[in-house]
Image (cartoon, rainbow, N blue to C red; front, top):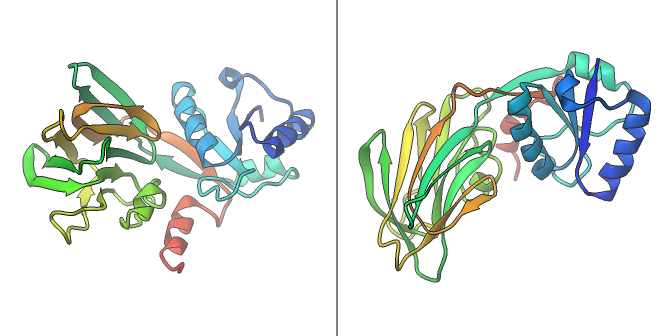
Length: 252
């Protein structure tokens, strides 16, 4: 089995990268059977985007703190773990946005696409789902669309629902909604197309972020799941992302 290792800049990850490379070798990604990622969720998200171009499975080992997308770290029996790993297919979100100058930007998001106000003024956003206006005006700090894989990240912090992986749903979650005051968001079929229309963008400017890839001063954002793109995530048996999503719902 040919492995490509990549690591974050964290000192523990760098040390472990040297140890694993010495033990198992480290081939270029284009020649590898599996990419092994050392670090935390930030490094994993970057590696998963890279993996799309090479159509390569990804197995992460946690060298950070939380590491929800990662497996536990161990430098022994790695080949056996990889041979027994469970495959979790993920579909990212495709975002297209238009900024105030009319420029079009595109990006993929594995966790979520989020709109956020840029100034002290509350954001005013009109929400369209499958070209039907479902909410005329959301007054808030922001709003996001999250995948099942990302539902335990920013989405959960904003009191959005946890969606087990494999469920054909997306979470549409407001961030500090003021009007409608008790609106908690919606669960949408995964084939839904969501469009955010920024109201009064000159005075109430907003930025959009696709997994941290930020574009400022946007006037419209369209989001849909990229069904034709499959990310091949690997997990230790019994500790899959689906298992973790279920467990997370029973944690205090």
